[in-house]
Length: 170
Ligand SMILES: [Fe+2]
Image 1 (cartoon, rainbow, N blue to C red):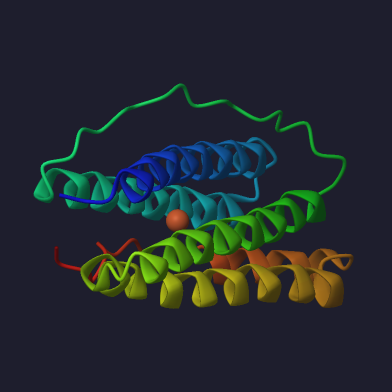
Image 2: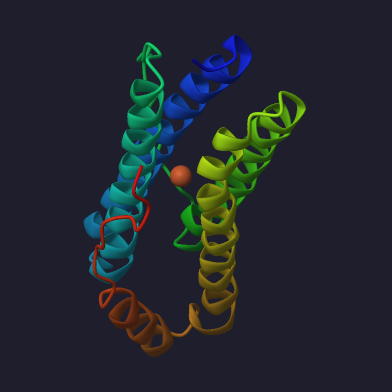
């Protein structure tokens, strides 16, 4: 059994992961509607990864005989002013998710719940990668995005991303 506070925090995090999945699905739709299918592909895969994060956390609760409490998932407006804005929104959001994961980690540390800390280690590492990826997209958009050929090449590059199931086994 998990500590009550930790089980509640993980349940909240599950909702935040679904929220992330929905946010990125909206961003993917935004780009695909504007024929930037590479960007659309990138964020669709991002959305799939967020769904996977939620499912991993659900499994972790279930492995600990804890109840999963699904909550409503809010959709964000995908009425972005320009092509750069969704990427900036994604970067901000990942920073928020990192802070949230770190808070759960701190609670597990306080409870001396070493197993939950070990489970969260993968997510801590994953967040480092997510923030770096989003930052790269924003920076590269700033460098090349205003030039149509640069934007075309960036879009082509992002179209090469392929979905891979998470490496974490619970
Ligand atoms: Fe996530």
